[in-house]
Image (cartoon, rainbow over all chains, first blue to last red; front, side, top):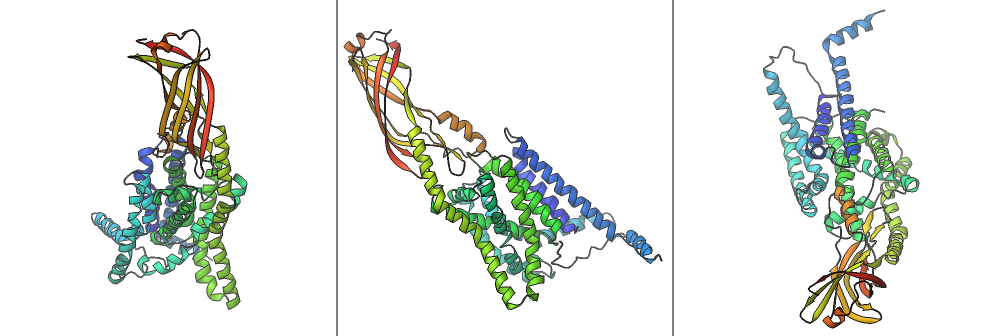
Length: 74
Length: 429
């Protein structure tokens, strides 16, 4: 995942949490709705982090060297 | 399915760069992001921003929609400046025309896939449109003006959310689309609608299922449309292109045509029938006690008539209360066949729920006014009051004229009745 896209996911989920969800988090009668947002935001950040980590690993020069060495094996 | 509509941006790793330079680079990166994407995103998101300004009570809803006008003026100027100032060909300002075309479809598909849900769960997907229409224009829910205005607001909001995807992200691939539409926006929708918007409704599992279902298809559409228009379209012959355009037009028109046809053919008539049914259910019940006060040679009796139940359920499954205006009550208090006082009462209108904007407070408020007391005052002579046997109930004969109002229907109505009431307290008598 591209750095811009990763930080956009993180920024959107945390930004809306701070501005909209946080002040009303677990307000009476809305525990399930609050939990839905928190879980959704956590899933976004977790999946984006994994995708970002995999991209970094794939573009890391050290990994790239190992990869090319592996490719050169007969 | 994965589409990369823009070339991979180089991400050089500056291993030799001193650590102290990184915060400065991050700051510069953030500034660049704000200039290239952030401000454009905020301008394009103004229809959603306007909705949030109203929902969060920052400004009145109708004032919030002024933000769209300001953004409408500012966006061309900002884009023109970015096009002249930017040296990055991947900057969204250079691709807005394509993004605007792509963004026409995800929000429409969002409603197309809710048409089957109308039959499965009886979920009226255009009901929030009418709420948006009421919020933006003040026209009452359940009529054409609020429906048309609301459909326009919905379209602007959906379009701006779709533009957000194309402007904010560099890679318009399936992973980003699913995280943005299917997970993030669905989760936000699952919070915002019940907590801030849906007054009088009790969204349950079907609401959440439809929310995730529709946003999932929105994500797929956001990825598929660039594929169709950039990769497949150039390979099509004239006939296939005509068919494609016809198909896209049908998809685009379908949710609006379905909603307007349902509203015209079924909703308005059904709603009127529901309200007429509620008009027949509502009644007036006299309180069990009356209070007497004597002033000079006049005896005044105070008692209540309770009007209710006022709650009814609309075509869109929203719980509302019947209104009553110009209520005029007349009647008599009798004992042993002798009239002891003449009664009257009036109310210009009964309390409603229009000012209860918080969904959380809606149902408690509805419960409070579901049965509304109307004060009635009776006047008789002190001689007649002296002759009342406190152990024998008074007979209260009453009749009331009023105008009942529902979402769509207004009708004159008469209610009458006879009740027994005890004179429980006597002041100065």
